[in-house]
Length: 191
Image (cartoon, rainbow, N blue to C red):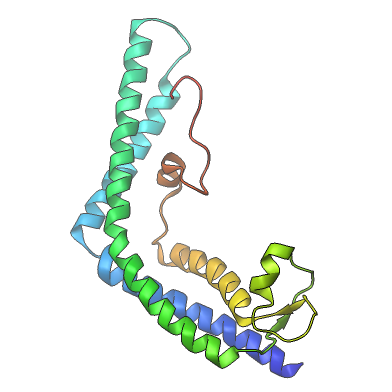
């Protein structure tokens, strides 16, 4: 049992180190560049401006109302374009991080291959069991493999490291950008 606890702590430490490595690579390739700083400032400015415009719009009908809605739509389009450009700037670091993590995953998988590194307090859903019980012998689905614990730790730790270092996108920009896991796009009078 103590070996399992030591492995769990080692995986959490590895996760922290790889998250710091990823943020370091991203800082070198993206965050310190003038283009990124300019685009980020523009997205922040546009997000706040758009938020204020949406708050000031009233329910009154008429020509001015339509002008305001048209301005809001143009502002949203401009913001969407800047968010796309910002994503393209980040893309080169994504490739570098992907390459590094692929190499590291191969090494760590060979070290922890076939070893139970943690005991899950629940039985995972059937479609997750392939990942949580990967390369483990036996039928106990509460046994946890390296890859499952590493992915869970990295997903949570990297987000927190970005917040601590001040590298996470602002709430205003995230709210306006939407995205796959973001809030749904606004519906109704502005869409």
